Amino acid sequence: MPRFDRGLDRRPRAHRLGGETHAATMQLRLTRFAERLSTSYWVVPALCVAAAIGLSQLAQALDARLTQHEHDWYLFQGGPEGARSVLSAVASSMLTFAGLVFSVTILVLQQASNQFSPRILRTFLRDRKSQMALGIFTGTFVYALLGLRTVRGTSENLDIESHVPSLSVWLAVVLALLCVGAFIFYIHHVAQSIRAVVILSRIHDETCETMERMYPEGVGLDAAETCQEGAPRGAPSLVIPHDGSSGVLLTVDEDQLMTHARRAGVTLAVVPMVGDFVPHGSALFEVWGEAGSLDVKAVLGAVGLGRERTLQQDTAFGFRQLIDVAERALSPGINDPSTAVQAIDQLHDLLRRLVLRRFPSTHRLDDQGALRLVCPRPDFDDYVRLSLDEIREYGEESIQVARRLRFLLEDLLRVAPDFRRGELERQRSLLDATVTRVFEDARVAAEARRAGPQGHGPH
Image (cartoon, rainbow, N blue to C red; front, side, top):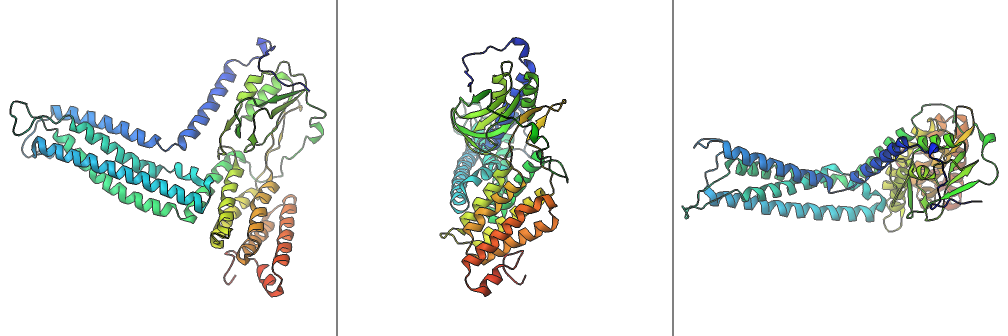
């Protein structure tokens, strides 16, 4: 079985996709760059600093042109020393505010990582409200510093023409008052953001957005494997390894892969699934057919790898985060089944959205009906197993978890089409077996088998 050598390129130029491939590659890079920016905590503060610099320049330009009368609303009457005192006080207090915000943010990240899961830190890093609060403080600090350099003269030295930027000082006071309000809002926001229900709801909402992108079609039978008879047979003619740094498969541009496979007249299969770890040298693509005209460099450019999973195309990663929170809550050190039930609530909603969603086929055909692309992705049964297996195992001794899981399964079975019931019924039988094994008292076991939307209480 031949393997691709990056040092050899025998492809004729007529088969290269040129500008089209370059545009697709640039679009993929821009998408990755945007994803990195969305989780970068410095972007919004940097923009606020840039805005503060612009505001300072504008205020200084207006100060140079505005006439100053005794009763002007923007007039500062404290003289040069007073202006310096005000601007210095604003600058020093804003630096203290910024340091406090940074410290509180680090403590929140540590608390969330320890109590919930390290994988939810991306959610906090994407929090625009916290970024904006830090940006307001740092921007006001920069504004005050820039204003200080425009104050000239003293009351004692009359040889130097004094200049007090009245409008700039007035705006510094306004920004300081704005920062006080922003600080109060930040404290409230941080206190709310570390609540379990807020974290779980945020993960749920982000997962729903990814789900809408990856599974946009409505009710209907899965396009499952209508072309299984045409699936690749035998050993592939070419295996394309990953020759870069190891990482997680984040994105796959199926349209570009389909275009390359169709033009080369081959069948192309992506070996790992989105979210899988790809070590250096492992198989990334398998090719069936005459692969001499396949643009391997362009094919490799149609996938993106990174250090950790994201929700860009990986719907299962959202499920993974919710499951991690539930498992951490069920650990002996925390023992908080109510938080686990809140995580199951979000999983229940996601599965209910998926149970009637049409899953696209992993096999894509061209216009002539020939198989060109095989791209693996999880199906509904995979999501059910991912959502329930580990929680059932870690929460086997909790009646609350058992009742909530049963309510989830019975609700899904009421709405699931026939071709989706198999895994749900299997999970219900596994839950029955777990309850029978763990709760030896028949009365306790009977209580654990009662479905409950809250896992406890009168229902």
